[in-house]
Each structure stands twice: as structure tokens, then as C-alpha cells.
Length: 97
Image (cartoon, rainbow, N blue to C red):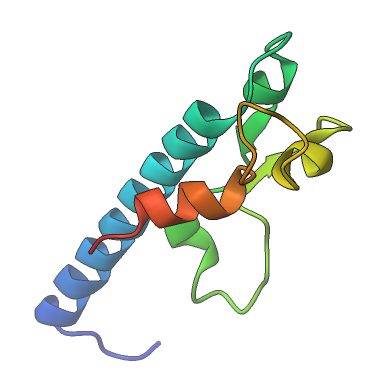
């Protein structure tokens, strides 16, 4: 095991915390931006792992997902409530200026 200084461990901790906060905000923006008819699409958003635990592991995992069968059509803009889709607008709202 390689030596990691106290400063390195603190930096890693801050980065992990920042990634998890980003994921929480992204999740909130996805839910808020999902059109509502029955509420199923909005309730379909799930966090499958913490972003900070996945990054740097060499694995590629989906951290947030929605398995509602029509979510792709909604994300393609097939709703008057979200004509620009769901994911890209949520990412744009989550990014910091």
C-alpha cells in the first residue's frame, strides 16, 4: 500500500464530498425536470451508487438511472412539459458557472 500524506487524504475526502453533493443536486434536477402525468417517471429515478465510490475504481457504472420504459421518449422531448428533454437540461442546471 502506497503512503498517502494527510494533505492527500484530506483532498481526496473533499473531492469525494464534492462529487456526492454534485450527484445529489443532479438527482434533484432530474426529478424536478421530469414531466408528470402519473408520477411514475419522476419516481423512477434511482441512485445505484455514490459517485465518489465509483470514480477512480476503474469501473464504469451508471450512478443514477431510471428504468421506466418510456423515459427515453421523455428524454427525447416527447412531452410538452419537457420539450428539451430531461438529462441535458438537468446537467446544465447542475453544472457550476
